[in-house]
Length: 95
Image (tube, rainbow, N blue to C red):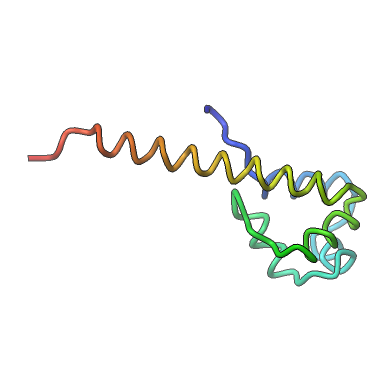
């Protein structure tokens, strides 16, 4: 997988598409700005259910769409972890 799906980058672009600042999106969604910044930085954040609903409402998308994007990001992160573990075990040990 060349470019793993990153939820945070998707969320950042979705907010930019609304034409508002992140701090204003946080207020619109009723979430803390700090939490929003964490979600944007992480590939596969784990927001609670009610926060997913708030995020979906603020983005004018369905909860299911947000959950699907989160699931895609988690799958990509898991795959990247597997590939990293595989490479680490296949690398010759330094002598």
